[in-house]
Length: 326
Ligand code: HEC
Picture (cartoon, rainbow, N blue to C red):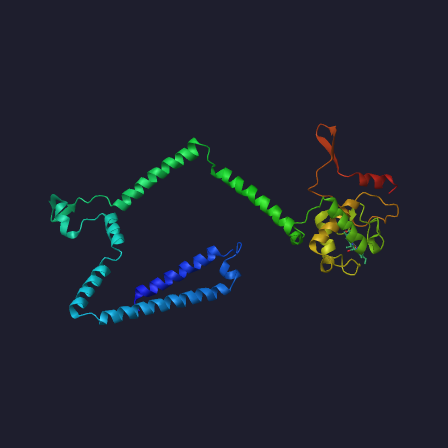
């Protein structure tokens, strides 16, 4: 078999592949991945094409054998000419694009000066180069009109559009992957459904030590400003996930609760803050101040012209506790 036959078979296989791909509905998957049977179909088609090629070349040989010597000669020359002209169009185009004079015709373009035997050819610019140059001119005009005259997006705007799009995608991703939360990314959940779910988890797992109200029993009070292991959604999440200090009784819940559930129960614990249940345990740990929290109240008292006193209060609970005789 000749090379041309192999090329035809390969071409046929590629064609068949894409035809099958386009005719078979396979959603956004490749048909060949979704229906492995297509491999078999494709294999059969290729075998079939191979067989056809073999039969054709055998037939050709037999017919050639039956010719008289003169006809054989004619057939061979015709074949030779066909062979030589193959891809003729591409070859001619390629040479046109180079635009070079063949060596034999250089006499036509040689300039008539001669420096110590060095002469110069007056070649024209190669057409491929000229066309590319025209293309850059057209590009420049289109670019100028689009971005300088009409209001095409500049790089800053493109950047902002992409960032906005990415934000939307991140939100979408977070919504679909609630369990990817960890200490660094957890945020206070505001949805009532999440808080309710958190309450459910709290009632099921935590009330034995922290009481229904969060006022504390075996475990510390979760409603006051004092935190042993740090307040705020991140620290609370971390305590619930990793547990308290060794031997204190607060286990790491990450084996029992999913990250999304820990975020819900952390958010619920946050809502208990400041509820002042009647049977609350004494505060333990330090007052925890969220450095990132918005400041509610800033009081500036001028003592004299060189000193000022600044009192920042963020939370009414401290005042309540102090007022309550502490
Ligand atoms: C077996 C009793 C027990 C259970 C059940 C328990 N805790 Fe605790 N919890 C503790 C103890 C004890 C501490 C104090 C840990 C320490 O001092 O290191 C604590 C501490 C905490 C703290 C940190 C308090 C602070 O002041 O820093 C949070 C928040 C907390 N628990 C939430 C929960 C949540 C939510 C659950 C349910 C998922 C839960 N706990 C279940 C005993 C418990």
